[in-house]
Structure formats: structure tokens, C-alpha cells
Image (cartoon, rainbow, N blue to C red; front, side, top):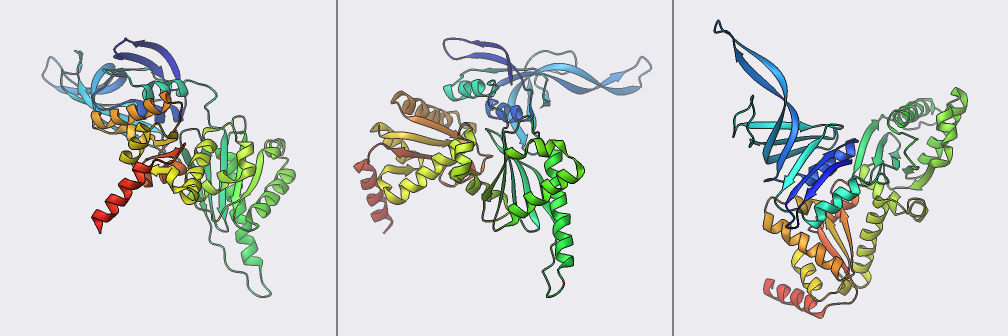
Length: 385
């Protein structure tokens, strides 16, 4: 993301002009644009024209519109963003108040204006414009007959390819059908890796599976690379890291990212930091339940006692339609930062963010237990009884 211009007043009202440069920037834009904002961007509009003879024709014209945002739709697989709203600035082709949908595209400038720019949104702009925050991890999560090729960016996990091949069972004295199907499966996974992974950007490729599937696949891949003289694979051999996962489904990626060998290799990536923070929360919940809380009321009560060491919060909560509710989460984040706590904002498109979403989307690790919280739990459980 490239920041062209930033005009924000002391009362936090103002506008920014941005240019999304990569598909992931569309996800950042989705988190920036909220209902009630005004968005100015170039778009195509179908316009009807009437000739002097009275015949009516239509043609498509490119024009710049300013919309008051009413709905935002994001397609995570295609990384496309559509913003629907009403026109609020006079235009020769579109009447005031007319509905229009702008499809925001990479490398096309837009200006976003808000009445209130909060700290969470401003921090996201800083992150989006930081070149170090690019997709730097790829993963192949596999089992016999099923594989997912994913890109793990700082903000989301993108499934780039799903490979499914029916593998017949081994039969006594005849394994040829099984072996042929397995080779066909490995070949399809190899082609998906070559098609979807950019080795100029990716620092590490995780190959995760149960059993010996990962070892057998890597042996096959590099034998084929030697046979076909594939310099791309041979030069990047050191980037492949084999780790255990319980299955070939996408959710097993969390296990792979939790592996200590992976954590040390990916220590500088946001995805690994999120996974570790959530893992620490679950461990604390198991061993010292008084120092791990989740749910907005519990977390706010812990914050009032200045007990929060690490706040875990899903970015989905900052897209809430109700301004007052959204402001409540922003105030919580600011308050934790003011009391020297750490704030980790999880992407709802990451496996770790999905898990946090199941815990109401907000949780916290505490510096010390807060007796009032356990009393609240006891009261609520006795009321239920």
C-alpha cells in the first residue's frame, strides 16, 4: 500500500489518499472502509444517451464519484472489494443520491474520508504502508490424496490450490495402482507449488503432514527437479522445512506454525506471533485459569484493574456496524497500550483469528489474578443453578 496524502485534523476528522499495490492491500482497505465514511474513486458507469432523432443508446464511461458508504463486500479468494453507496457530490453522469457500486482495484488511487480516525485504523494504515509486511511464508499441508497450498501473509491465510486425488489401497502382491496414483498426486502438488509460490518473496515453505508423507513428497520433488534441471527448486531447497501436522486440512496449519523449529525460523512474522500468543493463552487457561480471561465484560473488568499484560482481539470487532460498540473496542485497545500492555490484533482470515473468534473475539493474559472476576463467575454460575 502506498500513502499518497494524509490530511487529518486535530479533532481526528480528515481524509487519506491511498494506492493499493498488492492483493493483500485490498484486505487492509476492507478493514479501513466503514459504513458512513465517504469514498472517492474512479469507476465505470453505464450512461444512457438520447440522440437528436430520439433514439436511446447506452455507453460506459469512466468517471470519478464520491460515495457515502452503505455496504462493503470483500471476496477473500479473488481479493476483490466492492463498496456500495449513494453519490454525495455533483457529477455530470450521476445524480446526487443515486446508488452506485465502486469496485476498488490494485494500482488505482482512492480517497477515504472519516469524521473520526481512531488509533486502530491509523495503525493499520502504517502497517499496510510498511514494505516489510509482505507475504513471506508459504505452506503445503498434506496427507495421502489431499493437499492445500497456502500463502501465509501477515493479515490472512490464502488457499491458493487444493489438490485431491483418489489413492487406491495397497493390495497384497500388487502395489502398482497405489504407487501410480501417489505419483500422480505428488506431481499435481509439485505443479501447484511452482504455479502459486513466488520464491523471490517467500522466505520459508512449510511442508506439513502426518506420518512420512512430507518426506516422500520432498524426495519426489527434488528427484524431479534434478531430472528436469529445475533450477528454481534446486536453488531454493534450503527454504523447504518439513514439520508434523495431524492432517492435510487447512486448520492443521496452526499446528505447523506452533512447531518450535518453525517458530524460530519465522520469528519475525506476524502470523507466528499470533499463533504463539494464542497458544500462551490456552496454556495459561489450563494451568493458571485466574490469569486468562475472555469475553468483553471480563476483559474490560481486568483492564480497569490494570491487570492486562497481553490483549488478544479480532479485527472483525473493529468492523462492527454500531459506532458505539466499535468505539468501545478502540478505547479498550488504547487503554491497554497506555498501561504498558501488549495488544495483538488477529486477522479473522488466519486460522488463529478463527479460533479467537470462537472465544468471543477478545481475550487477555493477565499480569496477576483479579479476585473480582472469579467472584463474578461464581455469582453467574449460582444464578444459573
